Image (tube, rainbow, N blue to C red):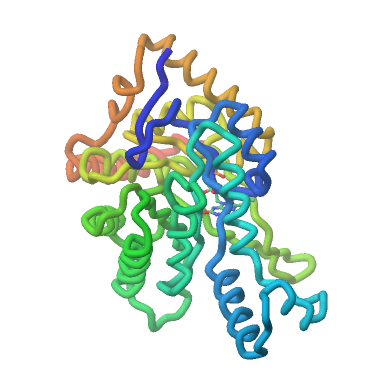
Length: 336
Ligand SMILES: Cc1cc2nc3c(=O)[nH]c(=O)nc-3n(C[C@H](O)[C@H](O)[C@H](O)COP(=O)(O)O)c2cc1C
């Protein structure tokens, strides 16, 4: 069965992508993902903070009048980070892209526009097929307006697009007051793809130790519902490719995202939980489901259950909600 597809203008052998995660921290990791069958790999992110630190270090080196970067590192105690994350990342990207025969995408994690954006060009030169920009920004300041947050996204996209010619996907947070409008504006501003959605760290509170627990929790399939809704609403309404991200655990989750209209489906948690080889099981499950349903190609599946009439879909959702709450109030979920 032919699962080949296109994403960001790239030809992929199938629509399952390895999301940015620690699984791609080494060339071997990328190779394992490729051997497991994924259509493309998004490398873990290079963070704006790492690049800023690197730039600061370079400035300090220049001020010291050091002759060479490598030699100048000896001016600092060994405990000081050598600030070469950018170089290491580009080297990994270069080696990974050469080691596998599927596209490898670079990833930049940023919160604001800045000179770090030029790294998109370095990623392009290192062999990245595209770059994903993860705008990870929690607007905790009560003085920051929604329109400022949205403008930040447009500014970041503009900077990355002006630095490089490779395709750029923007990975969004699920928290906007009008997600469709933000998607539409990013699309108009030249985003080649939209990744729906990023997942915040979501710190927890331990009531025993009275402390904040800052650890990453892997996702659950119930979390597909929000991205599923937005993909269904955006399919056919933006020119940009749509990538689903969050909550894939079973092949049926991949099928649901495709039915909603995703061009590709990304997975991080499931591959971390079960190992990279699990990608093969997800793909086989997708093929089995397509066979069972009589689908020959992805084009027959994609967008089959997208929202044809977005306003009608939204109105229906409200009507369904009202009737579900009525049912609950009349005891449908138990005697309470
Ligand atoms: C341990 C871990 C590390 C991650 N690192 C990155 C990262 O470097 N850059 C990024 O854009 N997303 C990162 N993510 C987010 C994932 O790429 C993905 O968008 C998110 O986990 C939702 O997908 P999932 O439900 O399949 O895990 C990370 C997720 C996990 C669990």
